[in-house]
Image (cartoon, rainbow, N blue to C red):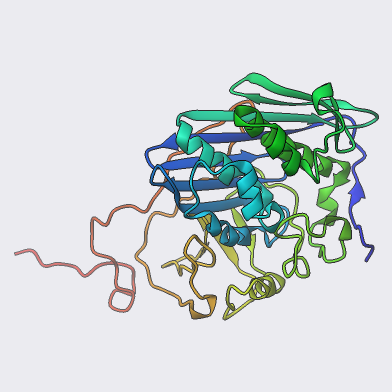
Length: 361
């Protein structure tokens, strides 16, 4: 297999990368999300008004099957002061050791926790073909930054001319920017990074291992060892109405082992569904067998057991930031199991699925 299996996108030059982030602050918690053609992540950051107390993540759309594991290193943010400057966060936690999308969401959520309210960022990066383009970021409909870019470098405005938008961005941004300008720059930086994917036919690499894709080595959590050796590229983005399901294959089981998060008892392919933060729940036809694979509080995977559960309402709407090609962002109600109004069916005593008939005198 060639080192770079990615096919070129014949439509590159006729479109743009569009990306949206939303931050919603509530009492003691910030909900953050990001959406583009290749990624869909959610992050919930809890705090005590001074420090981060809990971080939960959900991966809905992601490029490699190891990406959901990136929730684990993000737990190192717990205990960090909410007002920690960007430069200090970067000094403590290398962005490339994390899923960089979740990393940015964590930083933005920390800042937003002190500010409150709601914010929506929209990024547009036109295809750099044939020449330079104007890459922009808006907040709540108002344009904040407009940079002329080409080949990973800012050309205009002159104040930032020659500054890198890819490798080396965090260093100069932390030294030169602050406040809302820094926050907007971080958002635009990651949008520009993702825009490079438009050069390739991503769907053409679905199912391929990325171990020899040296150009990406060390770029992020999944493109670092030991994940990169076993990571598999996912199919192109799912329809937004499709539930967040993916197959745990033998190779993904190896990735879990390589990440030292435990061992799967049975690594055969099986269909899982992502619910409530990031937990993988095996979907069954009767009483569901719940297997928590990865979450905010990890359990040894070798100790997983099938557990009986009463028949609850099975509902799991996908949280989607985009509708009508990104025209607006919807908020979705949480769906949880129905409360128990009647005693659960006992599988052994009521095999026909009905409760015991009561005699009425």
